[in-house]
Length: 443
Ligand SMILES: Nc1ncnc2c1ncn2[C@@H]1O[C@H](COP(=O)(O)OP(=O)(O)O)[C@@H](O)[C@H]1O
Ligand SMILES: [Mg+2]
Image 1: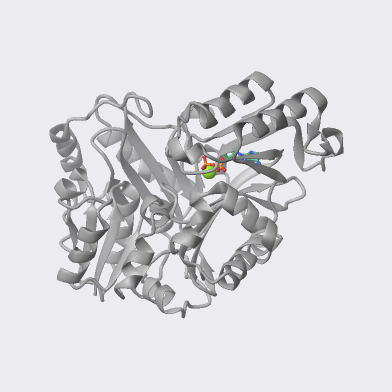
Image 2: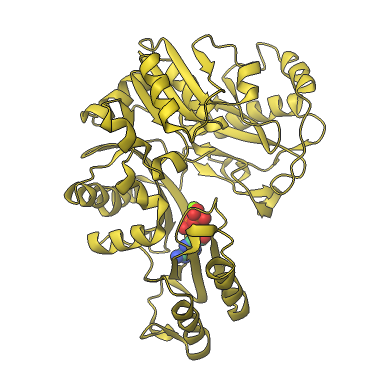
């Protein structure tokens, strides 16, 4: 069996590694992959195809036909939202992912909110607007008169944080399209940037304004076959650039699995109140969901899960962490998802997994480029003992460079192993967080 993975980050490197462990899999192509994987990954099954753009669906389909690829899997959201699955299906090529309609769960926050409302899935109360004037007067009423539409702010249920409101550009905005605020000027300025200055282009043609949920955030990942699903190991990630959650938001600086916040009881609620009705709803609307679904959740103080957002793909770095703990053969599992016959559940490695991200100085705003020769030297200095239970996933020459992932019997053991390797390979002009998983050490 030959597999094609679309995308260029460490997430896709992690997926290619996991697929390469399947005995049935002869070859895993990474398109477009990245220069670091090409240079440093010595696994013979993994091959980088860097002469085709991720945007060129025609060329991708030709590659699939010419190389007789058995299964294509998409890492990032953009190709899914642009309908790559529909394009493949027209020619009966095997691809696992949601079609263009279902991918709107991520591609249009307004669509996702209305879908949840139709299906009775718990999410914050909201309004959507296509008109700037209407959205503006809604916000003015909120800040000046204490009204959320017709409802008085003082009547909000206690799951909401009073005074705060959330404004979201409906379309894709690389994680920059959301503002949570209690300040009128800040809210109106952000709305203007989205709808008048159009800083997110078409993604800002519609906005969602919602109540602000109070609680703890967590993510949940499942693999779906149109009707049924299996849930992946739970993970926690760290979004801020610096220690103690300071500094700007990033694509993610590390994490660990399992996430103790998601206990058996909460998992059950997420499945019954969110995953099942989501799959049922999409099936009834004629677009059964196939592929990975990723819920961004707020867990309120009474332990109830609410959906902040859907994503139609794996998170990064979460994917790098959880592939280390899935025991199932990915070739087999993803084929089963495609054919609509997923097993009851995934088998999880009981060990703990860690991931520490190395980024280049200036990330996320103006990251510098690192010297690959210097990195090569560092990587060569690692011995077999250092690398026991370690796997390094590569991303870019600038920005997020690579991740060190590890397994260990305890959180402490896994964490120590990962940091030991990171200390040896972190080169000049790079940084990494030193406090990943500090909070779970006792567990
Ligand atoms: N209704 C809400 N209540 C409280 N916080 C929210 C709400 N919606 C979003 N947020 C915060 O904003 C962040 C980004 O929102 P999200 O919908 O996940 O958009 P995206 O990931 O596309 O930027 C969330 O991780 C959360 O911290
Ligand atoms: Mg999010």
